Length: 418
Image 1 (cartoon, rainbow, N blue to C red):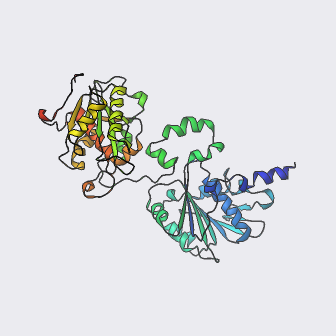
Image 2 (image 1 turned 120 degrees about the vertical axis):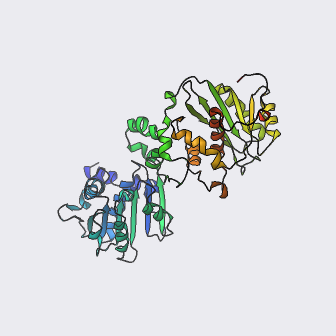
Image 3 (image 1 turned 90 degrees about the vertical axis):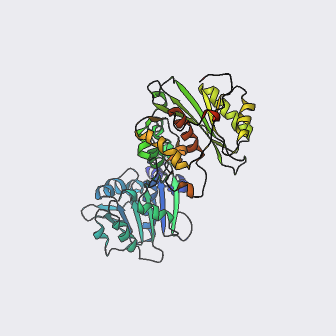
């Protein structure tokens, strides 16, 4: 096999591309690739430009800065020069800001930091990289206004997402085709140490969901919890205390069972000797029968050596305690009833986070999503019940001694003292 044959194979994108890296079918205007770090989105953009250059004379590029265009889109390991065979590789004219392809096609190079340079320029095809990092929103408007040459002008946008106005609007546009890719989809081309020691460190955390799994993670205005607050109050599980003076299992049972039922919130929290609280586990489930969620509560009680189970009885009344009693005859249970809205119940608990009293021992993505969605108007909105957040509120409130009901509401069975 000759060197040319080897190069032909190495540069054959059809042999290496994943489905999410191939241009989608249909009459689209914008192809938006939301992908994590190292997921292969740069290669997908460079390959799209390479193919377009075979048939279209004007295929242009825009990056966040001039340095990004040069170092990532053109000269980078996955950039245009790196993915082209020698006979089709364009000539890079840095001083002129363009690529000249052997067949006569031209690619002009633009920086999003200079939106005025895009005025008057026209594109048949266009590659925009790392849109979420563009500092000047008007650059994207100028890019779209220049997409007006040929019978079918198109744009590919490759970016690790952030909840910016441009990214959210583009993802929601009917003329946009959106594909997703995670860092781990491209594991075969990434350093093993990165996957094992670095990427895994951020899995489940907000930064990991955004930078590795390409989720658009938004903040909800007016919410009691913010992502930054939760990150501040997070510790690694191994860094949390090994012994607790109190541990509670809090359960928010659903009104019914089955696949369409609400979740059964089940959260474990502990109080350390210094008074600080730690959320230890989110064991929430969906679809369990009453016997099923009662068994899960009992297993959590035994597994964590809990002092008691705190159970909300709004949806089940005495049935909740009876079901728990059948599953674990000696389970110490404290029943609680919600008399205020979810937001009001959660306010003092969120304040305890603000004061640095409550920590998450690990990462609980679905629970944290619910906490960051609790706003003053939450109880007036329709939608899924935040059962995980409810269970956490009951657990933390119990350990802090907040809003204790009268002794007549306490129902402890013999077998374990508090």
